[in-house]
Image (cartoon, rainbow, N blue to C red; front, top):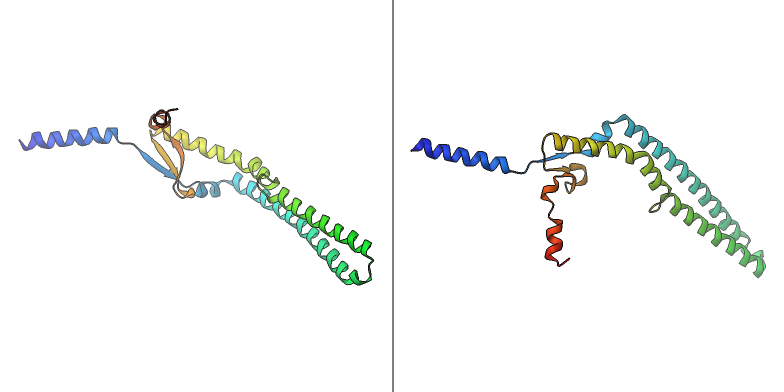
Length: 170
């Protein structure tokens, strides 16, 4: 009798583990830091960002000089010249803000350069993750570097999006 119960328990445990979903995680930050291509691309990105920051700093110093000169000469200038200098300063401030936005803002040059240099390397990592997931039959692979919430691979059989849409009447 004990053998039968033990056999049934073993059989149930095997069946449950056979149907269990398999999870894994990777640390993309760790992986990327080990790749020479990534280090080189990151260095190029850092160098370019430093050049752009130097350009902004230079324009900012020029703007400060313009403002200091204006303050020193303000009492000697006619109303028309004051207005002209103030307009020049405002224009220079606007140009500086635009330059900062174009270089470092959302969808700015730094973002585009990062996409150009880093994205292909990240794509290689994600391809490798997907191949491993399919080879070792993982259902889900999470990225530790993203706080554990980003899924790098999911088995499509567990996607219930269409069912949710049906429930919502779509």
